[in-house]
Image 1 (tube, helix red, strand yellow):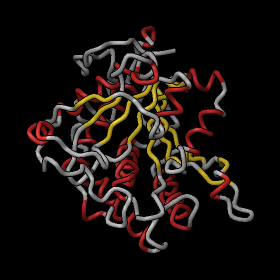
Image 2 (cartoon, rainbow, N blue to C red; image 1 turned 135 degrees about the vertical axis):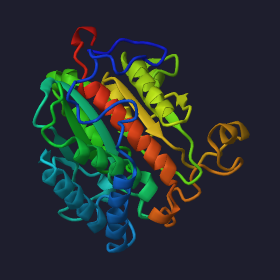
Image 3 (cartoon, rainbow, N blue to C red; image 1 turned 30 degrees about the vertical axis):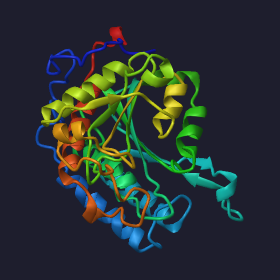
Image 4 (spheres, helix red, strand yellow; image 1 turned 180 degrees about the vertical axis):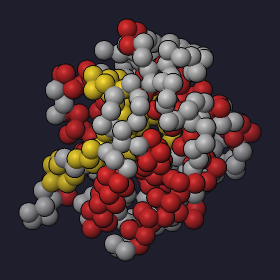
Length: 330
């Protein structure tokens, strides 16, 4: 199963074939939704890290508290929430602690044969609180989820995933994908990955459809999903750059499994070029995130404009696919 493979961003996202008339999120950019609500969750994740030794790594008390926080927010918003376990990498096992939890939530409405899945990793590195990497992705998903609500009038199911152990070779998402039945894999319309969207010297990157091999461009349908993200970011005022997939975040297991995928990120340890600075602003010759994987990755170092733009673009993309009705092309 896959979406039509197209090279250019799809036009006319307000076409009634692709948008539910009562959808609570609107395109482009999911009008009315901003990063302000997401910032509230970032403050909560920062507090969790501060109260638990300065990090939210999995496994750790900070990660367990993050799981409880996300679960409570989603249940309060009316979602069905599960916390399925996965085996920890052997180097992370301590005594009886050999498993950790992902958090999976989905709407109670929508056609379960068509699942729009969006995910972000919930863990940080052990050296810091991980508020950009990846509290920013978690916060954006929580804002979208609470605004959408657990029982929205959408045609398709929306499923949110908050992964553990991304910083340990994507152990949480790998286990999840490996345990999907063939039918479960086929039911996933696409997977959107959100990993770092508020880098202090932000860039605007999209993955999906770039590259000559399936491992680089993604399975059939990934280019269309990447195109929707590009168009939604354009509606917020920025021209995104499309990159090829690598195997450095939770989209990797989905690409390998043949599930259409796309992703967004604002940049990590790499350096912003002069051309990129002219396109997006910021400081050329400096890292996109100088605080990457350090104790300085805190809530007061983030680019709130980037957080806002990515949150709105993601919301618009979720709305587009949640309302997709022309499944004969899928």
